[in-house]
Structures are given as C-alpha cells and as structure tokens.
Amino acid sequence: MTMENPSPNTREMILMAARAAVQTHGYNALSFRELAKDVGVKSASVHYHFPTKGDLAVALAGQYADEAAAFLDQLAASARDHDQLMADYTAVFRAALEQDNRMCLCGIMAAETADLPPEARREVERFTSVNTRWLVKVLTKRHPKAKQEALRARAAAIFAAIEGAQLVARGNGDIKVFDQIISAYEAVGLFS
Amino acid sequence: MTMENPSPNTREMILMAARAAVQTHGYNALSFRELAKDVGVKSASVHYHFPTKGDLAVALAGQYADEAAAFLDQLAASARDHDQLMADYTAVFRAALEQDNRMCLCGIMAAETADLPPEARREVERFTSVNTRWLVKVLTKRHPKAKQEALRARAAAIFAAIEGAQLVARGNGDIKVFDQIISAYEAVGLFS
DNA sequence: ACCTGAACACCGTTCAAGT
DNA sequence: ACCTGAACACCGTTCAAGT
Image (cartoon, rainbow over all chains, first blue to last red; front, side, top):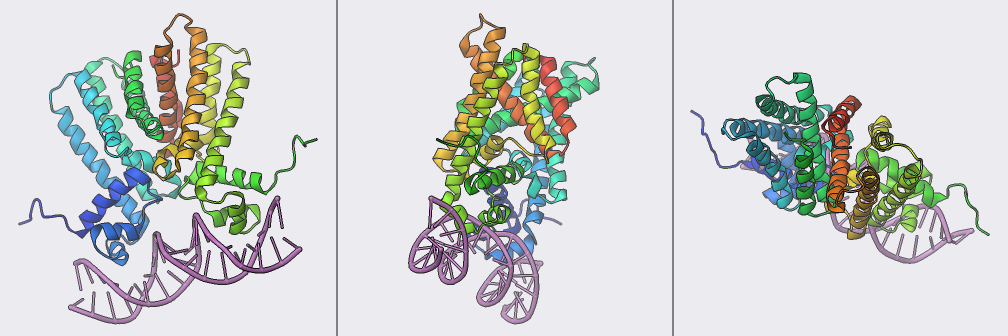
C-alpha cells in the first residue's frame, strides 16, 4: 500500500521553497544554496534531487501545470454561473499578487524562457494550454453555437490579458491596478 | 559647442548591449563580465560607469521610458486615424518578438521587480505612465465626451493586455500567438 | 537512498594602482 | 577621466566519500 499524504520529504520541501522563490524573484534569481538553507540541507543535496537547475525548472512548471488542471477541473464542476466562474478564475491571479506581490509561476518563467531548457518551456506551454482549454469549455457553455476557432482565440486573449494585468500591477506594486484593469476587461465584454 | 551625434562611447555601448541582453534574458541573467566582453573592456570598467547593477537598471529603464515617450509623441503627431494609430502601437510590441523573441524591457523588468532598486521600479512605472497617458490621448480623440476616469481604465487595460499577449506569445515561442490574441482584442472592441 | 565537503569556473563588488 | 588586476564572498556543478 502507499501513503496518500506522507509528510513532505526533502524533494517536496525543495519544490515548495523553489516555487515561492521563483514566483517572487524569478527563475534566474533562484539559488541552490539559499534553497538548501531554507530546507535545511547542503546545496549538493539539492543537486541529488534535481541534478541541474534546469531539471528543477521542469519539475516546478510541470507540477504547477498539473495543479492548475486539477483546480480548474474542480472549479468547472462547481455548477457556478458564467460570471461567477470568471470571477473565481481572475481571483486566482489576484491571490498571487496578494501573497507578497507574487506572480503566476509560468508567467514569470515565460519572461525567462530564453534561459529554460526546452522541456521546461514545454511545461510552461502546457500550463497555457490547460488554461485556454478550460476557458474554451467555459465559453462554449455560454456560446454553444459559436465556432470553436473563435472561442479558442477568445480564450487565449482572456488568459493573456489576465497575465498582463498581473504583470503590470506587479510592476507598479499596486493590486488596485489589477482590479481596475480587470474591471475594464469586464466592461468591454472580454469575459462574456 | 556640443556634438549632436557623437560616436557611441563606452557608456552608451554598455547601455545598448545591456538592453539587448535584458530584453532577451532578463535583468537577473545580466552579467557585468559578459557585458564587458561585448563592449571590449574589463568588468571593473563597467562598474566605473555604473557602480552597481542596480544603477545600470535605473539608467536602462529610464532611457527606455524616455525613448518611448519621444517615439509616441512622434506617432501621435503623424495624423493617422485611430485604427492605424492602434495598429502602429501594437506593431512596436510585435517587433520585439520578431527580434530574437525579445520582450518589452519594462515588461520583463516588471516580472523581476522584487530584485530592482526602488529608483528602477519608479522608471518602470514611468514607462507604464508614458504608455497609458498616450493611450488616453488617443482614446480621448475618439471619444471626446467620455469620462477621463473611464478612458484611463481603458488605457491601462489596453497596455496590460498587449504586454500579456507579448508575454504569452514569447513563452510559447510563437509570434502567431501574439497576432491571434491581438486580433481577438480587436474583435471584442478593446481598442476602439 | 540520501547526504556531505571540497573543488572548479563563474558572478557582483571593491579598491589600490595605473594612464 | 577612464581603465585595470587582484581580491572577496557569492553562484551552479561535479565527484569522491560518507551513512
């Protein structure tokens, strides 16, 4: 038999600490030595679990995409109406800013894409897919007769617009900027 | 008398090389030693012109905001119609992607805001202001009777949406993603 | 299976020294 | 005014060595 919720082992603690660090400072600023300090091991131990920094990037983005997929599945099953679903969706991105002005992990890794190994880039793309496919599902329920092509474009636009709102609000260090931008998106009908 | 266009001195060459590097790899990945190699001096010389990496960030973002202001002033004076102005505006962000999948300097620095000195953060915010104020001017010409409050919100939304389109397209390494998202923005009436 | 110390070539930064 | 070499504490990475 397997334990369902074992207490976090070193590998999981590294992933948790790394995620927080990347969402705040970015992937390039991530330090194996500081990570080791956070977890209580030596940096060579971090290399035992993740041979290179690139391997850590792959695991980080992959886990993030998986969790997003699980969360969104659950949200879609919650039988909320369209506007409530979209409000819950944008609230996830708002929550990152509330938590130490953090960013979406894949948003900040997209900015650093040039320094990621190809496999990590693929996980970042998968996170985008998870989001846009979910948005297509939500939009299809509201516009059953619309062309999938148009809904896919709309879904990509919604995702990009929210990522941009988060990026700009973070740059200005003001969560009210995020709220104002999201309201303007709603006002123009981007979400409906 | 002063020369109008002196050949680029070391300081200017450093700024040019640094801008290209940051737009591709981000501020945290920037290396004084590699910068020095690009320019043909030693890294200690880079520190002569920019004592710390933070000072370089300030100069970089400040120069970028200044150039954006000058470019947008010129564009506003070009007597183009609204749709053409907006097309020219989005084309600037597209051009960065075309050039080695680069990003807006202030977009990528916004992602790394936690590692910037406060003065550099202020320059990033100033770049945002330059853009949104220009967009308010453009929108005011089209909607003379609209409330400035609403136009400011719309301007911020347009800027954030375009930054997000650039970020997501870059993450996916596909400029067609940018074009598709911008088209969806137009279709929903975000720019008009 | 998991961790460590020591070494390597890198990094930003400082500073005394050169022209 | 501008540049440099050398030193410092950092970094990712490797590896032989420990338990």
